[in-house]
Amino acid sequence: MNQSLIAVDASVTVKWVLDEQFTEQAQALLAGAVRDARQVVGPPHATAEVCNIIYRRRLRTDPAFRITDEEADQALVRFLRLPLTLLSVDDLYHQSFQSPPRGTVTPTQRFTPPSRACEMSQQPRRGRVSLAHT
Image (cartoon, rainbow, N blue to C red; front, side, top):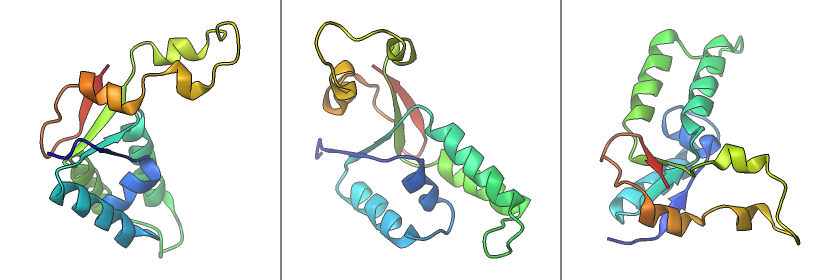
């Protein structure tokens, strides 16, 4: 199994469940990850963001962008079945309010690198969005 990660945010993830601009590229990314057995990870708030995008698409008045309640439900079901691991760093939100230690510390330096987070994460359940705590 290839240990390299593919990190995505909601703007990519939603393209796996709704037809949007660049959906084909996003689908190709997911297909390649599955083919190459690469782990796909996202931020802990991805579910809330994707649900919000789906909900807002239901409210759109432009027929080119509006989806029905049934299409929204189907999109949510597809999202929840994705091979996606949501990473969560313990105390992430608490740490964001802490003043930085002496010297300059970039946000990247304050948190566990994704490669380390995956080493410590639970294995994702295939075909389901799972939350990995580090």
